[in-house]
Image 1 (tube, rainbow, N blue to C red):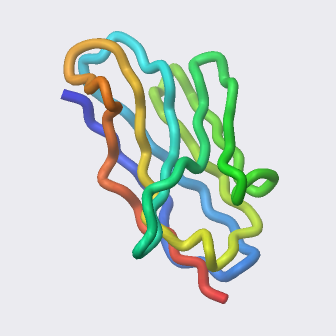
Image 2: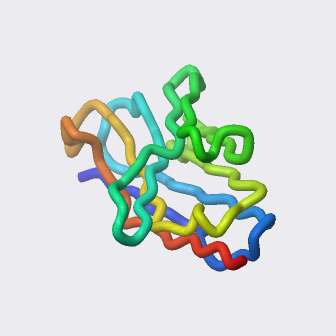
Length: 120
């Protein structure tokens, strides 16, 4: 079974920063893609940022230039540094991985989510 434990969410004022972490554990052989997604109330889940094993990254349009994704392959952990936060960044942020091996789902494995609230 694959477990994803997210941390780092919370309440912050506009213009502030937060750093999210997501640690993966389980019997998988390898983790290919790691990423962060978010879902605001009444909206569909959207991709925030993804990172491959060799650290190639993609970012969603609204967060480019403000958020930075990184990963520690030795610790199976992915991070999301969020700067210059805006009220519209308020959402539940989910960690997701694409892994190979036991417990890995073809559609990806997901964390339970962490709330990020940005006040104006």
